[in-house]
Length: 403
Length: 224
Ligand SMILES: Nc1ncnc2c1ncn2[C@@H]1O[C@H](COP(=O)(O)OP(=O)(O)OP(=O)(O)O)[C@@H](O)[C@H]1O
Ligand SMILES: [Mg+2]
Image 1 (tube, rainbow over the protein chains, first blue to last red):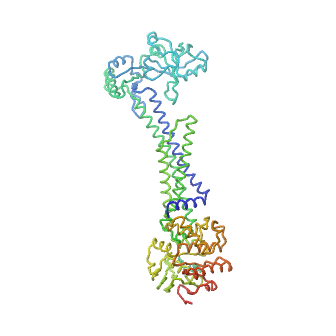
Image 2: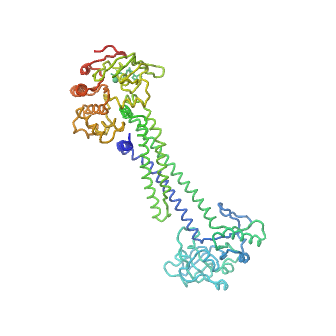
Image 3: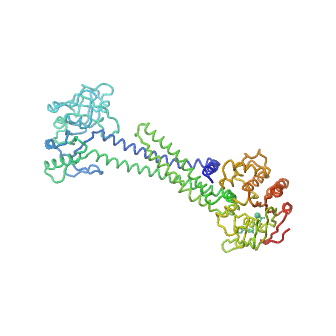
């Protein structure tokens, strides 16, 4: 039997029982589309995390007090570690080669109220003028914190985009006064909106001079973060080691009471989490694919029983075992292939809808589409194999005598 | 040319065995029209399955055109059926929901004959079986019993077989339609020189043949 005739036979017998074929295909469609949708959502989330971390500033090293283990989050070292970074740590960094600029920061959450009566609870970040360049921030309106603001313990504040709208709505906030922890601050600048994922974004914070933050708002002289931008991406490791050595010497400790985290560390950890989650979701979707496969097998076994006499007749007029075997196998594969095709379309539609609703920027990769076709065809072969064998092995006489 | 020598067939079902054919021998020459007659359960269908290479005998030899068929494998038997034998059964002859033309072409499809040639040969066979061209594109469930049997005869003819085997082809038909089908067989034999073996338990049906072989309880009782 040539391939064209085989396809024609397949078409004739599948269309002879349209409802049953359609329901069986539906099982595969659901399985494939959920796998495609889950994987594309996972990959989209990963890409989004990557771009928002890269948006924080490339070539960035972050020094945190206490010990952070990559892949496990922040582990408290159990000796009041949050206070191990101080202003006195800064001068030792000046002599290290490869550092472009250093940005010491102290952040706390405070209640902020505006003259309008609106109030919000957000992160207040005490910084130096270097902060803007180290963190890739741009000013939409007004100016950033200046050197003279630092020296004069100035009461100036720069607002992130979200905070600005929360406090002032549509009225322009520049020049107005807000109260942070009962102290008045004048708004001198607004940050450009960054958008993107809601986590650790610069939109939801306000910026004040570091000296004002330490002496007036928080009343402490330690730092919560030191960010360092490195001149060249290739020198990251070198700079990291030099910074680590300098701080160990200054703190006079053998084991670090601080952590240095690079972009790659954060990226690696978060990607790992997202990957795990994607695999988890895809496996659940995969189970429904197996259920779809069992549906195929069930339908094929029913068809073989129903068509026993037909199989006998075909054998009587010259069909060989392999003809019958192929015919039933191709029927099963045709069902799963059509299911795979429709499943890819449906999965893609689901992913597109998720993107359209603005939940996550999903990505349907060619790889996952090819994989879906491969898997659905494989399911057809695996679950069609046994029924096809059973049909092919039927003895023509028994099949003809079958009532 | 069919030569059967000392054929026996024993069905075994667990401990119980049943001898359906016992030492049957006969010859059928090319171009003959033979009827095999016997009461129900006498082993007629069993004999036809062996003659049609659907089954092999438990012992004895079966020579079809000089070739020993009794020891062939499954696939070799399928080849014999494809090349040399055409079947007409009592019922369930046609694939359901399939056109007349495709039903007749089916043996050629399995043989690998190409599109146009296939169609041409199917049309020749349908004409020889006496089915009107208006029915050729009908589905098999849109035909009368007599028309179904003619389509089955056309399909049995289409691969130019040495032997046409018919197992009670008129069993489901009224006597008038039966006569038409039987005279079609007769015509194929006299005008086209086909070898035909007709199985029946009715004397009137057997009369259409030139020779009658009687079997009873699995043994050959007489030939006329
Ligand atoms: N697969 C089988 N297993 C056991 N016994 C069988 C089998 N097939 C047929 N027989 C027995 O062999 C005997 C001959 O059966 P067969 O079908 O050849 O009879 P028949 O002459 O064609 O009868 P009918 O005119 O009713 O069709 C019967 O007694 C039947 O019960
Ligand atoms: Mg019978």
